Image (cartoon, rainbow, N blue to C red; front, side, top):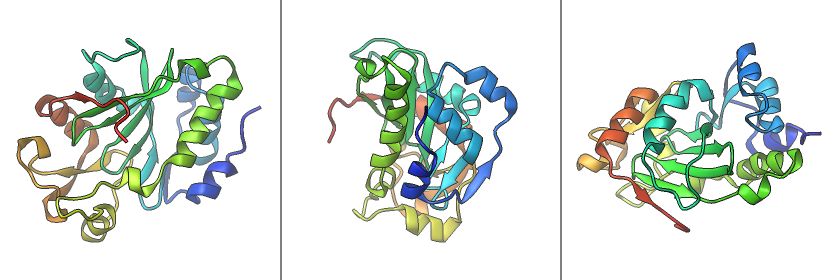
Length: 213
């Protein structure tokens, strides 16, 4: 039996935005992702919380970006088959591995690839579900809302200036940070998420960050 969905809404509130999940997603990803994630999709949809700060991903729409960012990356626990679970307004994405669980986070504007092997927490449905719940409980504005070059959090300032992102858009630094762009509110645009993630994967050097905090 999965955890109640209210354990997530108690932490994050009801979604600010929601896209109904196509029936075929449950058929496609049933058995690949934890049952609790399927329950979240079923009740909340592909949801955006707190005006788009955090989103439950449509993994089909994010798979190309996931593949671009994980291709050729030498992880300490080896290769896996990755599926996007959650992402932030700025594109920070958490990935579920078929073998290793919720074990990889990508911060695209910085080029950080952050592994954390959860393969020991994959023995039963309870442990798999708990990984999803725990990740949503520990997620916070401090993690999802990057500081700008002025050492101040960006999300609320960008939200006020541009409005919220949608399920297929994100906030992007233009020009990209890797190309010398500044991480300041007036250097942020709302961009197509898939396109921007692809561009960042091509211009941003990857750095494996083990125990970055």
